[in-house]
Image (cartoon, rainbow, N blue to C red):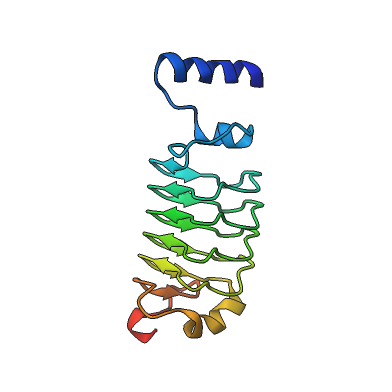
Length: 163
């Protein structure tokens, strides 16, 4: 289906049926986003897509999956109520004050440090992140990782009481 046809369908649905145009359609097609658009009510699965960026202030009520994407930076003020998966991506750093309600998985990424203010409600998965594994204990502020820090394939981990 042609882009213009899809645009007309989404406009019709928004104007006549009160259905919101999908976030991803707007973002990929450079259509201005509203505050409501930045609040994703479910999960956002962008696994293995060619997406390069996401808007600042994005809030996802479920999981956000960016596994195997070409993204290099996460947006500022990102909040994920569920799990955040960044495995096998080109992400190089995490934004300060990142909030993840569930698990944060940064396996096989280019992340070399954890930012101040990082909050993880579940476990932190570091498998295959050799450089980060060696320094994470020194960097994580007490109380900011609620679960375990898991750092190898066998599920061996540091308990949060060790942090």
